[in-house]
Length: 518
Image 1 (cartoon, rainbow, N blue to C red):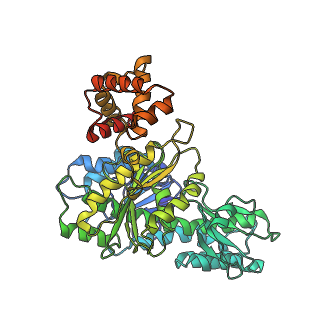
Image 2 (cartoon, rainbow, N blue to C red; image 1 turned 60 degrees about the horizontal axis):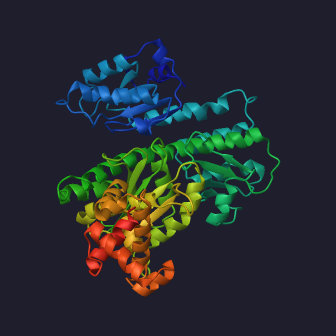
Image 3 (cartoon, one colour; image 1 turned 180 degrees about the vertical axis):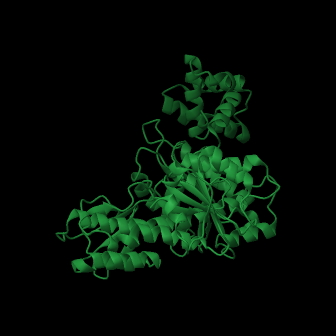
């Protein structure tokens, strides 16, 4: 379907505000509705963008419209359909921005719903299958027609999958997420444990539903038993499921915009966001009255746009927990944050959220093994007003997780750390940024920080063993195979060079922390 096809439909009553032949003949691959000021990261190439223009106000400058349209161009959007309801029309500055960036712009009248546009696009992509020649298709014509109707009606994935394979005798079939969540299964398919389902995702009898999605967001069609079906037919079934998947992704995109607004409020520079505004933001995300709340922050590679998908997929494993996933305005590239409606702790005092996510983390990491995935989890925030502190905790725990190294190597390894894990001085210090740790070690150790000096290396080793043995002269001498007098001499040298008195507990702790920060 092309952009110009929409203009020919009297039922939509769209008006072309700007667009030449090259723009109007672009093929539409999907539809995304958004009112984000910068929607680029949520769009896919070839999509039609629907916007009610809530993000724009008459007092805004031209640059705001310019940034919005530039984001559409960079993402590869084919056209912008702008709603007239919010402002009584489409702002001229937006039309001019579309002209400069080569994006066709159409106005949507008040009496035409965005749902009507979306349904039209997908019905033309799928509903017309029954009227096309049957030769290119493996699915029977009546099956294609039925699946088209089900897609248009927004049916649930279980029904869609069952009807997709009904003409094959309804064999056992599953739709699985990247980490083994069962999204849909036929009545003949028994429940599949998550661990087995995660293994099934990589089986030869499994077909990717949406290969263009990130490694964490993909769905998979899994038939555990051979059915003798032509591969082309399975691919057509997978494409039907992909259409349903894209609809869920559009809803997730909208939800992520609301989550970003919530996170921006939580991360306000002031001591606390206005309670009323925070309450409205939580309600928009479906999290009102779900306290206590837990905050989790995750970071992948700097150029990895799939971190939000990774965190979303992980949190779907938390049953009966609402959550909102998005990006902070101040987030580094490849970073995502979520607020979770927390369940009550178990009798053992362990946090079920942290436990579930830690068990899942190796599977999640394996879906993109080249990108270390780190995460930090806060302790529960008792009220919305304490979410700012929970966010600070999550960031600290993320730094601690990122600082960990695989045994015997300097390479970072995928880690998930919870604040409640940081129960030792060593663990606590891992949450301090590396540059700060290094600076503390240098200033606390003084001249001893220069470990290129053989004498200093010897003194540092003696200090480390001395502190490890709780300041025992005899046990330190025994461990180092030295005379006690030699240990006394070396420790005196340490005290002189560092200006510390190792008879004092606080000075011992200072030097122990300095050694851990090296």
